[in-house]
Image 1 (cartoon, rainbow, N blue to C red):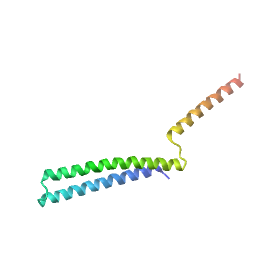
Image 2 (cartoon, one colour):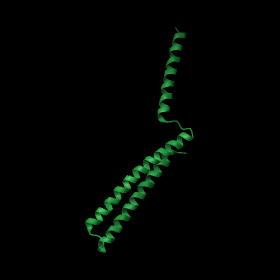
Image 3 (cartoon, rainbow, N blue to C red):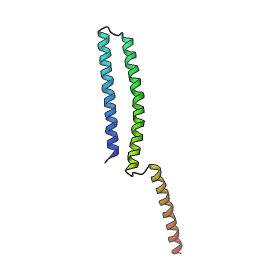
Image 4 (tube, one colour):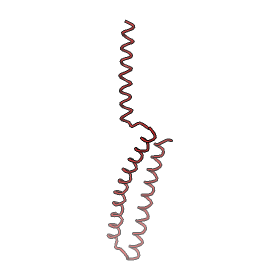
Length: 107
């Protein structure tokens, strides 16, 4: 499973959904302005307020999604970056020690 591709697709889905909602909000507010239900300032404030709420909710959703994804990856045994970095460091130390031992043997 290509997690980068999955994440990219989910991000694009979220962006597309947000864009679609924003377009529909603008259409509805413009219709209400034409029908005299709202004045242009009210319509603008309405759209801006709803978009701010959506952005706040979206960032909360993104944080929750990241936590769930991190937990899922941990459950299936995918190591965290910090664990990989630690293993690389240990491998580097072992390689260095091996070179030192080889150099001692050839002297």
